Length: 117
Image (cartoon, rainbow, N blue to C red; front, side, top):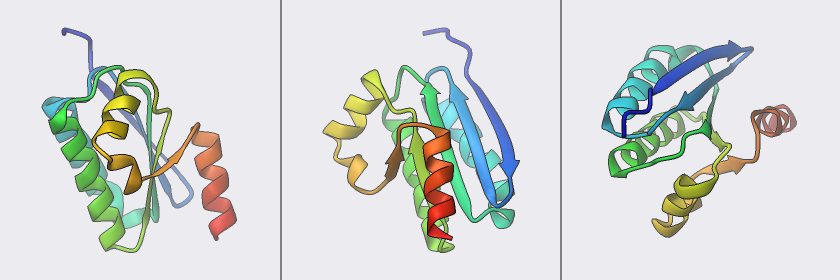
């Protein structure tokens, strides 16, 4: 699997939006954790857009769980968006969807955040 992995992070008010593309494995998971941790202090909500992710392994799931735990510990929200195909099935079969807030799109997640303020 030699697909290019990438993370684009943007800040929108008190939301940190991380858009991932490529395989979510140990390498991308480590990058995600590093990028989120450095900016978590200044964001109440983290939205992780997985629309561009077609592969998810256990290391990638571990990274998502770590982000979820870090945000929850601070009383913040972590919302996954764009889950589809293999990553959705992996998350569903591992029962991890029970611990995450999930929305279809970044826009839907932003709306959820606005409604909870």
